[in-house]
Image (cartoon, rainbow, N blue to C red; front, side, top):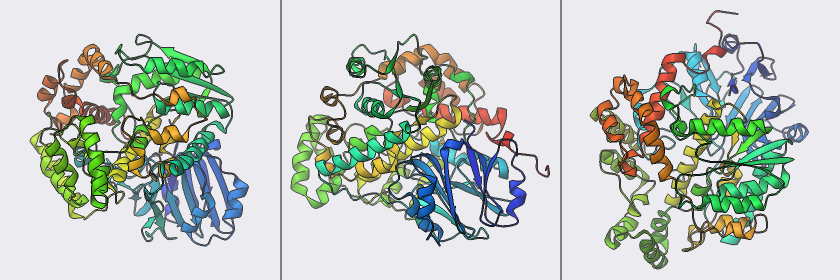
Length: 611
């Protein structure tokens, strides 16, 4: 998808940079001075803007913002940060961009579903919502160290070096911070616009907040009228979104694709949900009607700003969007982010043990039996309370170890990352050094509580992934309402001890949607597994995966041993051994795409000196 914007400071020097952007079909918004401020391509319905005196505010994205309301709210704005008043309480997922007497404020979302990047072009500070746009403007090359980090599983790039991108000298603004420029482009003081909530609410209180936030989030998806579509996997997260969307959409199209495992009961629950949504159009795709994971991956080229882990799903998602577009869908809803928000991570027990050890021990006994974990290992893990800085140091020394398993592997600030078995010693050394460098900077965790930090890290990985997918997929854009900031804030405000009830599946989400989603749907106690689909796809498309190891660009860069990767691609490999595979494949596809096409936005730029 071709949407992007570039932001420029209110200075004469910025005009030369603006001149390098193609003019045909471009949109632009000036500073109060008349100099170029925002230039790019975006859909008109994605923009709501207002001005009052020397203040300009633009909301870009999915929201219910109204220009007149924004105008009234910015009448008294005198400083860029005060622009946040204009969107206080506004649901959705959007960039907030403000120019106040030439001073600039720009921020994305706390979930990283929308981001802000910056670099310098001919000495002029420039910002954008895509890192590859800035790479094309500045002539930046890929960053090998960040590629090495991307090979790790589980991923860490949303927290470790969150201010870096996959391009040298192109920087990311951390999701919870805003970019601030003085009038001449000098950076202003660091500004935090969002902070995680204190997990202090009871289950009923948090459920009420989630109910409002999630209903409003889905409302921003249906508010534009027309047809919208949604995944209907049968899982609680996506199924709930279908019922909420059906309340506001003119017409709803749902999609369910059947898995390969006959014991996967997603199909049963999806059928029950379809029966309760008789006015919707329902698409049910068998395994033969929908592409497998990894289909076409050997020839895949994705002009995205960074490697995309969902290369595994690209053919399937492309097919899905093509089908719903044929039914008139203008926006597709997915349930991504629900697991991370409504299934508190076991690390909440470490936080609880510091304040309520008896309650922690009581809950620990139940959890230990549920996970069939060794008692001594669990006790040691729960009582080990290292700082985030020390966790990073430990992780740096453990990247080449066997992945931790079970309950104990989910304790700590986040699951410790591991290098794939096919990573070279040089790549492992680079990974370790990057983690040590991050630790040396005495970083703050995303939240004081381990479980909240871990949830936010997972939410940001998901938000960032769908952002990159929307840059590459053809068809209606995808929306993940569970990653909307208001939903994230509401879900993380619950006391974890109340959000985890042995024998009950996602009690917070169920409580929040009682009365909006049929009770039988909310009582589902399980989640479908798709290991069979993975191995089925591996058997059918192993040849395409092996083709990526031939003359591998990752191997040329010294990051992987292609022969070891080929040996790992067999049908009897343990899941833990192949968990890192999508990250490696994503990096290889990305490098090949750059080799073939150059940075994704280069076609939108004029040659330097052309006017």
